[in-house]
Length: 633
Ligand code: GAL
Image (cartoon, rainbow, N blue to C red):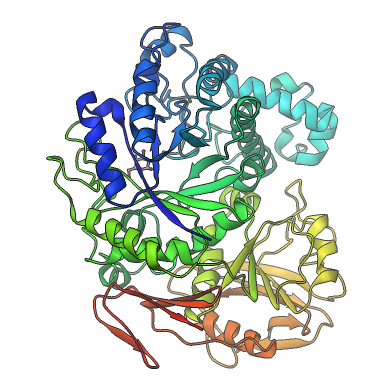
């Protein structure tokens, strides 16, 4: 497939007479897409009910006339100030009961019906006007659901909606009391109207209560997005996307993605390394100007799954950002590398954020492809280089992996609710497995937890899945190779209780976890053949064969060549050794790559990505510092 480039652009930030020059420069640079509009509500409707779409008509005509395809965003992440006067209670409320005020963005509660109606109104107007517009080739709903911690809201409207959601789910307070175990601490309710949101309790609230609140909150995001999609579908045939973020787990992206045509995400490698990754100081220093070698790839693979094969990078970091604790500049070459890496994972398009650095407001320190004075910034030249390469390059096709990793948002909520050890974080766990697999040079597929057919993969890994959905239980019979569960897999019922049949309770595997323990960072449990468990370890028993033991004799891995259970969290050094052996048993070829070198097979091309500031060689291939090389295979 032909891959393409684009850019995020804000015509409302610049004098109209500059638009034609901006558009022609975008085209000259080899860009195909321009995303606009997602924050422009105050200019589309300066006064309630008085709409001004003329400027947007002209902007789209200018951009489209120059040869660009427009991605039009719905502006619902930035309700204008007057909207707040109309709906003073539309703000989200934080866990301490404080409203999250106007003055930045994402200042709305997903449960507010009045705000939802306002969104329906503006989206309808946009859809009617531009749904069949020849230059509007794709749509984006809202902007980065969940960013800035904006999913959970403890507002009065959220509380009412939560009560309705609970009444629907449980039908009677008794059923809810039983499901939650409310006899504990006399927490029983006799009416849904008595149930509050799980914040500001004296000590921890009931985990079942929190888990339902997390499910409810995710459902609110899904419903909010669906309301927009339903309207857009009436008026347009163009594909609809949303731009997700990195390491946001507060809502079920698979559920939102099911309503959309394309998943996209916003990739800020240097911001993420500084801002949202557990890493040693040495790791942060080594990858300061390159970003973590696996974080982007993980999300590429995740969003390929969320988009059921169709996905983009909607925003790609082009230079220093403004929002992380430290905001270094990328090494020369990294913007090109990040872009090609996305293509190698199957991105249809990569759009840079943003065209020109804005000299005003919150993001004035955020690089664009152009500097504030309109001259090209270093990222511009790398984007243009990729555009030239795309013109002449071979097609990049998507190749699936031999190995799959299940990712489940509900498990993230569960272990957030009840970590049982300060370091037990679901994303961290799954990402550690991903990193180890990628260090073995493998293509990896990420699967949703309701996957029904496992026959495509030789190895399927299911770390930390809090409850085993019936579909996945049934799918185990379809597995062609080895499936590994654990740690903590299937250790709760959907109601957040310990199941009567102790975990993991997997078909045909006689193994039970008798006791679990969490460990502080400096503790570990050695394994018999070297390596160790860290953070989390389980004492298991049963008649399943023991594949690997702890040094103290307890089982570490039990099962057979089809299905096994891992009773602990392997250290970062241990995981690659374990996984390498597993792959070997299944006839999967692995490579032990240096930490900065990554590879991916894409159709008949093999890509090599060098995340270090020195040239690296692999066999007879030399990959320059911050470089990417592809070879036909
Ligand atoms: C993204 C967001 C953009 C912009 C960018 C800055 O999270 O979608 O609007 O704020 O970050 O890096």
